Image (cartoon, rainbow, N blue to C red):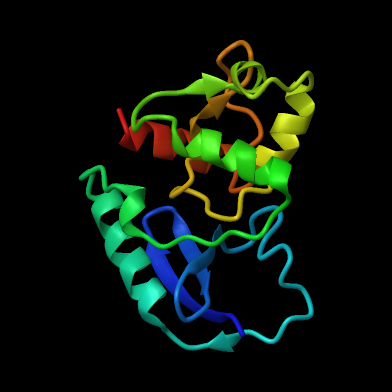
Length: 158
C-alpha cells in the first residue's frame, strides 16, 4: 500500500508517494500525470521514512545545496523504455541542460517524441530532473509541472 504526505515547496504543494522502503513519486499537486498509475489504489495519508528523507532532500535542493539523488531510495513505476529515459535524465548534471533530440540520440531512439512522452511521465519530478530537458531551439517546452515551474527550477540551478 502506498503512503502519501505533502511538502510545501516554494513552487507549490508537492505530493510524495512512497511505500515503506522507497519513494514512488513526487508530483506538484495538479500537474499533468498527477499520481499516474495510482488511480483506484488505496493510498494512506501517513508519513513514512522515505517521505522524511525526500523532504530533507527537497529542503537542501530549494536551499541551493545541490543534494545528491543517490542518497534517496527510488522505485518509480514505468516501462523498461521509460526507465531507460529516466536513467538518462538522472545523469544530466545539476545546472546543465540537454534537448529531447540529444536524449533520443544518446539512447539510440529515432523518436524525440517518444523520449518526450517518457520524460513527461517521469514520476519523480525534480529528483529525476526532467526540467533540464529543453526543446531543440533551447525553448522551455513540455514540463508536466508547468513551464513557470520549469523556468524557476532552472533559475535556481544557475
